[in-house]
Amino acid sequence: MEDVKLANPAVLGLTCFGLTTMLLNLHNAGLFKMDATILGMGFFVGGFAQVIAGTLEFRKGNTFGMTAFTAYGTFWISLAFAIVYKPILLTKVGLEATGKGLAWYLVLWGVFTLFMTVGTFKINRVLQFVFITLVALFALLAIGIGWELPNVIKAAGILGIFTGAGALYLAMAENLNEIYGKQILPIWSMNVNYKEPEDL
Image: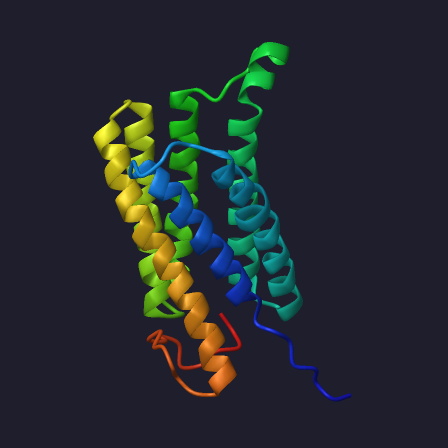
């Protein structure tokens, strides 16, 4: 049976992660207040679309991509849920997303991201940048929110813009390199068995 060429779901997942991360961190950096655009992006773009990308990575047999996109997709859904339903949860069942609870939430995601970062050293330099800055982003947000330090949150926001931009760059590099059949934007692959741009 002839092999069927599958699309690269990493382009979708990285695009959705990058856009959502940049938007939230523009808010964290102080450019605008929390609003419905962030929550909409969190639920549907960073959330559901990334879960779809993770499911497609499963189809391709890519454990790293499946884990990353599915996990971070559910991260965005859970974060948006906690923000949107905070008033309802507080009045109906006496629960709310507290500063310390959110800080520990971010710490746990930072630990997960740290372990995932180890895998990026076998993939490419741009993905390394995204994950290393994401670890630092989770740490800064945990400190800033847990200890109520606005300047630390603002610094995290600035860093997060670069994290999201790195993911978006990698998505566009994967996309354009495949379209043109040659390297248009470099990603500095680290794995000799890594095939650009079909596999993440």
